[in-house]
Structure formats: C-alpha cells, structure tokens
Image (cartoon, rainbow, N blue to C red; front, side, top):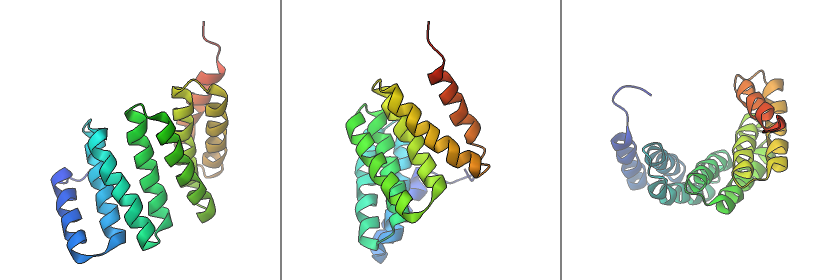
Length: 160
C-alpha cells in the first residue's frame, strides 16, 4: 500500500464520488472503505459498505466490480461466521466472473468459496472449488497456484 493512503482517504474518496453522482466509482470507493474496515478487524462495519458497493455496481452495470464487491461481501460474512451468506455472495460473484470470462476473478471466488465450504466441514466441496481454481491459476501461470496447491495437499492428507 502506498504511504499515506488509508481508511481516511477511502472515506474522502467515497464522499467525493457520491457528491459527483458517479455510481461505478462510488461503488469502488464504498468497497474500498469496507475493505479497510475488514482489514482493521471490523467485518461487521464492512458489510454495509460492501452491500452499497454491490448495489451501486449493479446500477452502473459494472459487472466486473459487482463480482469483486460480492467477493468482499462474502469475505466479511465469512469472517463473521455467516457462512451461508458468504457462500451466496461468492456463488453470485462466481457466476458473474464466468459470464465475463474473467478466469482470475473466477479462481479467486472459487478459492474463497472453497474456504467457506471447508469452514462448515464440507471438505469435498472445498476440494472441488480449489481444484477448479488451481486449474485456472496453473493455466495462467499465476503465482497463487502454489497457495491453492498447499490447500489441496492439506485437505487430501488424512488427519491423525
């Protein structure tokens, strides 16, 4: 992160874009404010900002950033233990990413959906989502593929 940037800057950006009435950029700024809340350990404060971002991106017709906002909204819900809501947002974002033919976004959402499945004890679904993500990331020669490979190895290794 660049020096001097932080939640205050994101909040000011949100206020400026809202005043200008530009829903796509207001949505990006709202998502950024939510992201900072989540990173600072307050996912409950992040959720309204992510919800606002989803609504604004829908209004703007910006499906890519709507998918990103669903991802961050899913993450905040996951962090609060609201796994059903998290899965709903990840699945919605995943459908958008697939429709946009954005494989990296699709992989990211698949990873997060797998994390949520694992959190609720559904290891078979977690493995399936991570395998989907791994294939995409390997094909793209993406560095995150090794992280997903470790998740897959851990889930395949019997505990005991």
